[in-house]
Length: 200
Image (cartoon, rainbow, N blue to C red; front, side, top):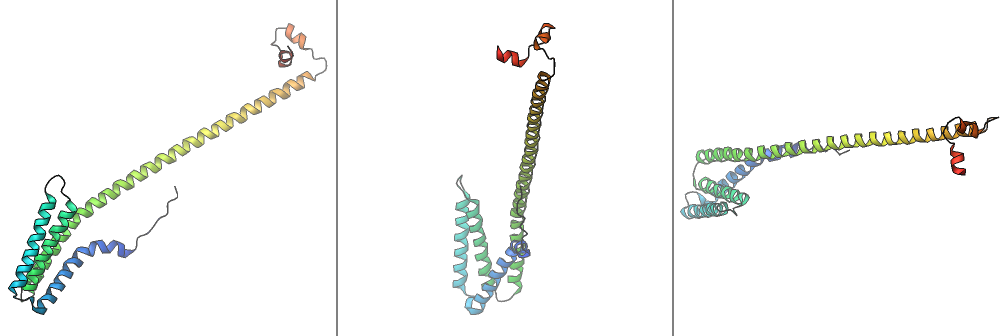
């Protein structure tokens, strides 16, 4: 019932939202470093990056077909294929306009794909929180009902004990009255006293 409330740090909120931009920016920076170190207009490097990108795309296609296809592996392979193609073009190009254009397209695409997963995650989290809240309210209701039932049983037991004690005191007081004759009560048609029943 008393759950600890944990406040998330602001970095924990921002980091998932910044991850796509950080990933594409990192690829762009590494590609431009590679460009400055000899990849510019290098046909061999372009062929290598094209082959790696096609291999990653083929792996993603193989991972996504069939009933045993894994969407996580397929998504990772396709993302790697796109990153390799982007890095190859950014490393091969001689100016910044084309790499920056590709960076903006890749970043927008990454945010588009990530937004879908964020919506699904938010929907699952809201559903879970509603389920937990409903269970908590149900438990509180059950606890209240059981508390009322237990209190009622205690009060009934106290009332019964008080009645039995009062009856015993009344019988004792009646038996101690001067001139009390239990046979006269029986002859008058009153029920037999417990003392006489026990004695019999």
